[in-house]
Image (cartoon, rainbow, N blue to C red):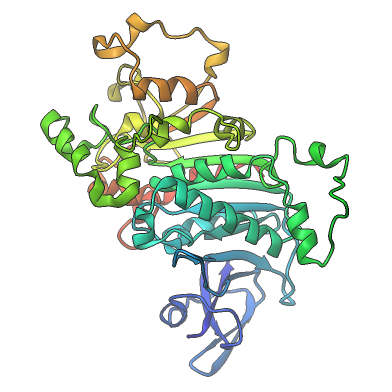
Length: 430
């Protein structure tokens, strides 16, 4: 299968095939048949024919060769970056890690990755993670988070010019990313890089400046944006967190008992994974532990953002994806659409709870006298300032596909979410 090179021009995307000696990318042949005219000069080879165009910057897609880990998964995915007119690589400084959700793949983020590169061609590398794809997404948030952390380190090793890092996760991918950054927080990868280069530390002597160099960083890089899209931060258990069940308690209870159908990931989502006296994993992930700094890692990012569907998402409810209590959800009649982003109906920034009063127990919704899992997760996660972006696909023919449309999983069935991705790109800190 030929590799796929994606070129972005002022008025379209041009694809071309490269020799098989180039690293392979899935779907290359199929996409290589599609081409659009461009007024910029460049070359494109299709079916043995070479055509010349005016020059345009080239967006290069390549994937690392699949490496099987000890559990049968794959490490890799593919990177997207821009080349100059001579075919030489630039030295972008900002690495964006895009993480797919349940039964997803790196392909789900390809549209968004292209938009990031169109807007910031000199600055970013967009890496669409594929270490957790299809059935591997049933392995559990912790296992997938560990895999993602190792994949991020491998990407950093391939791109020594990067200095900053951002994460964008869809659905379950947001939880996977939250686990991974807890593992990568203040992690020193200098020793790993040195060993790969044939350099070894002697007598266990550490660099006295090392602690300062990694303090507050993610895998040695400056953390900038942490963005989630339709992510069930509070899990999927009860309280109408899965709109498909319409808030019917018997159905929600049956779903929780059947969560094993989705493997360990299902148990984590429905908070049924209590074992050996330990709380559910999602509850553990709203605190720092000795070796996993979940909250400190989130706090290290300059921006934390949630994109949430207010309606039509049958899998992830508005409350859990926007980190709100039920009584904190805005009234839809008071919300209006953004002029440049027709499906964005509300944008707000919440203060961290450290700068506001704690919610008294008697103020907890539904008359609950005891703080439950959901309340504890909200309290701890809102110690961080979050930007909340509310999305409504009302009037769209794709509204009942809102869970995938908010991500633009592909530009055919889910194209109406393009303005949401554009909002994400336009407000991205580089």
